[in-house]
Image (cartoon, rainbow, N blue to C red; front, side):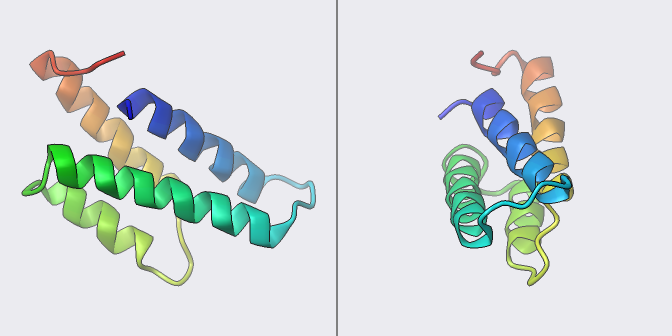
Length: 89
């Protein structure tokens, strides 16, 4: 899984949740949970000791999930990966 893909998926979920249209809440929650699980797997595989991984896991465990914050964490990691030349577009 590529980091850019995770960011794009997270932004779409964030858009659906913040939008005015009515969506199937269960389907949206399931999609959000799948995205969270994929993101956590990516972070634990690539950055197991990072504070960003800990922050993401903490945010994902909150009862009211803030997708904006979780996407922001991934975007911050993207900036770091870009600086280190590790980003796989």
